[in-house]
Amino acid sequence: MEKFNFKKKYGQNFIQNEDILNRIVESFDLDNEDIILEIGPGAGALTKKLIKFGNDVVAFEIDETLKEYLKGISTSNLKVIFKDFLEVNLRDYFGDSDKINVIANIPYYITTPIITKFIKENFIPKCMVLMVQKEVALRLCAKPKSSDYGAISVILNYFFDLDYLFTVSKEDFYPVPNIDSAIIKLNKKSANINLKSYEKFEKLVFDAFKQKRKNLRNNLKSYDLKKIEEILSKYSLNLTNRAEDLDYIIFVEISNII
Ligand code: SAM
Image (tube, rainbow, N blue to C red):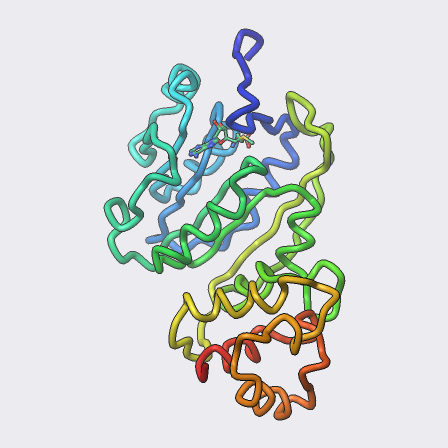
């Protein structure tokens, strides 16, 4: 790829290490009928390995100048679509399929938009194997009472079981980025407590974490604190606790009654 003009604006740092590529694709537990959705195939380093599983692979790439690299790996089970993934309507391509496995080495600047896109379109993939910046990975997978735990950890915990799989050194990419990355795996939760309104839940969670050092009484001033207190007391908590003390289930329960 000596002549390729790597574009910073698309977060183009391609993986160069074969072992890492193998470890990523081996993180999936695919069934025969499953479909692989790849976001940002780049020059196809992961794609070449993914097609070998024999499952259908649908890849969305924003940069048309990568066409000449990707056309070399055309097989009957691969469809490459040159579109901005954030602009795509998922149901247009996948209907209501519950067999979607997402794989993406995501540019850092669209990590949250990509993950929340699935939630906002109410299209929760069976599994997602994502490469993100290491700090972001720690935040997404954080558990209550840790300093990395925040609004996005709570929201993802409602939909997925999250695992931090392994760290990838920045030296394993070309061009070499500024910081290390990590692979995380998100498995859709099989059963879950009912959520009445995602919008209410999301707002509550972001409000509760608005000022991280402040307690719930301060951050949730505009809510019916009596009702919130009732739920908290079930868990031996109260309004002097901080958002970081609350498991996602407590946020769901609160959002269901306000
Ligand atoms: N998958 C390759 C790899 O691991 O070596 C490339 C990963 S590179 C970090 C990110 C890729 O996502 C680039 O190919 C970039 O052009 C593509 N990309 C960036 N924004 C995108 C978007 N909104 N929709 C689809 N692809 C995008």
